[in-house]
Image (tube, rainbow, N blue to C red; front, top):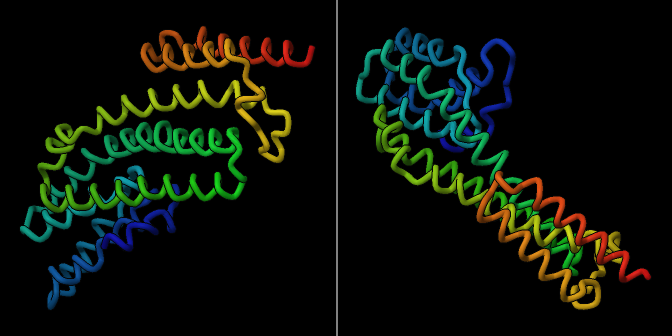
Length: 244
């Protein structure tokens, strides 16, 4: 079932969203539960092929929880209510955690490697490895949590520390932006990634960039605009001084 969850979006459509993929991922468990009862098996597949949506990386949590509920003989009405209750939360949390948090941080990390002189292929491989370690780890964690907790998974997820991770990722991203912007402006041969930090960044410029990164990491959105302006202004000013 976990393996099938990697293709849960393969049959995405506007009528059921990932509902068909969800039912496909549940098939091994449903076959085991309703072995010898084709009518109940067909009814269960039809129930789970209806409208459902969530972030694909957190869908295993719903799969594990529903599989546990089906195995314990929970009323189908309760199972459907559970799926309706969790799908919005799993979508919102996943979007904030992955699309707005983890993926940008991994990309900024790879860009920072590129800016300090790493070869392009090393930066690409670093992005793929780091991103997918988090991606696969999140799938495994969510599946285990869902199977272990069943319909109590929502309460346990609130205690799991996901909210803390969501707060930390923008801080890490702010720090990486503080590194990447001055380096990008300072690079004399950006296309070949042949950047020497010691030669490209004057000491005062480096200090300004670090201060801007710390401010962004500490105060977040409240100073986002001034921090970006400080980074861009100091970067272009340093570039102008170097050229003159």
